[in-house]
Image (cartoon, rainbow, N blue to C red; front, side, top):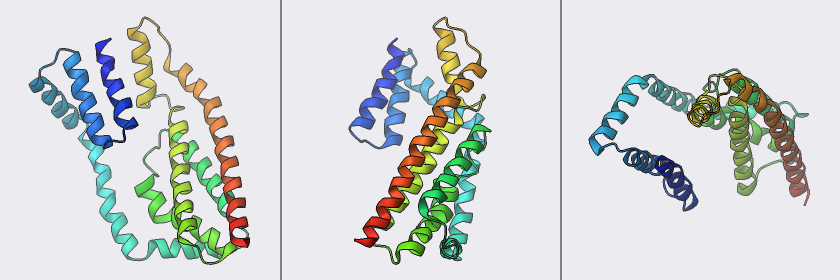
Length: 222
């Protein structure tokens, strides 16, 4: 049970708002020490995990590409494109993205979208364009609120969609933890039970997006 101190470390670290990377690293060392590993053995474990999963770092190759296309005017083009559709408002637009994010995450395609891949270069500018088309020039407060809501939409779609995929890490972690406690369960059962949660999350956040859309219209009319 001492190995669960790592979980407590994560909770406390996030509660006091320390750097997330630092918190996770400290939690890993706390868990290793509780499990009886020496500092050298923990470093070896880190190195082995990184070496075996180095393909994960391939995602960083996308960042220079995104930087180049942004410099070439991708955000401006995305904003101008959505502004042409006068009937599209920010609420339905982000609801559509939420559905796309949840469905693709449920199929295991978690990396085809995200904050770096889609939110910053395309979705957030398009959401801003949808607001501008209806309310005119955006204030700094409205612009930041729109960007935050676009980011939140991606987070919710990914978080509640990925657990439906049977081979996602969180499902396998729960199956392993329950098996260690003597509770044997098939991963498919956990995935199926994640579907109602994903549906409820979709409905609740879709409602938030509609209210957000109405609030922006009232703010513009004030």
